[in-house]
Amino acid sequence: MIRNGLYLAITRFLDGVEEGEMTSQEHSSIPGTYPWARKLISIGFSGTYSDDDAEFEATALAGRQSFRFKSTYVLLFPD
Image 1 (spheres, rainbow, N blue to C red):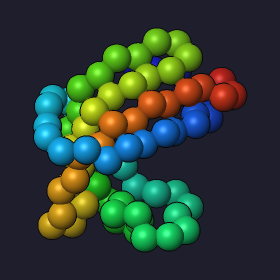
Image 2: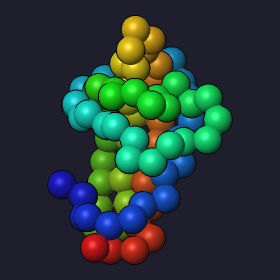
Image 3: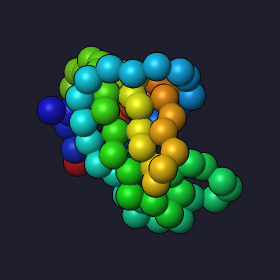
Image 4: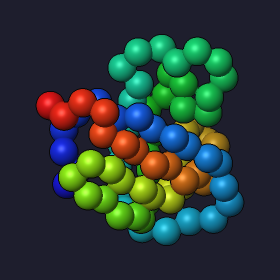
């Protein structure tokens, strides 16, 4: 499990799929028209993590739309 804290998330959209699962719901409104804005989403993923960062590829289902992406999370402030 990665450490609790505030992370910088860098995301790039792709095509394809592999393992893992999480659920996400935004806690603050996201400006713009991101596919996950104002939606509860389920995400399947695979990747790696350490105490200070994580990198994974994922497929998310937001409503009826699915999309694939790659994200890197960098720990800015530990909890």
